[in-house]
Image 1 (cartoon, rainbow, N blue to C red):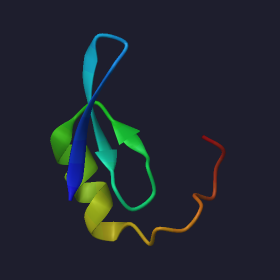
Image 2 (cartoon, rainbow, N blue to C red; image 1 turned 90 degrees about the vertical axis):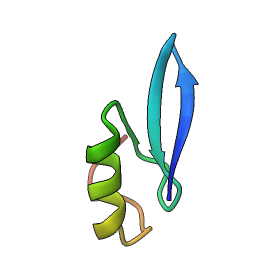
Image 3 (tube, one colour; image 1 turned 30 degrees about the vertical axis):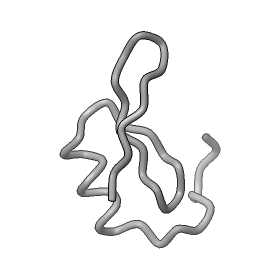
Image 4 (tube, helix red, strand yellow; image 1 turned 60 degrees about the vertical axis):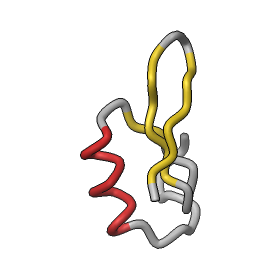
Length: 44
């Protein structure tokens, strides 16, 4: 499930599995469906 959070006066959507944040809810939901909850292969 995607969690809403307020940061820098903006509403962000955070993947509850890995913590990655998105500014678009649809992007966050799509990511979460494919998230393996492991460290991403890139630096955050």
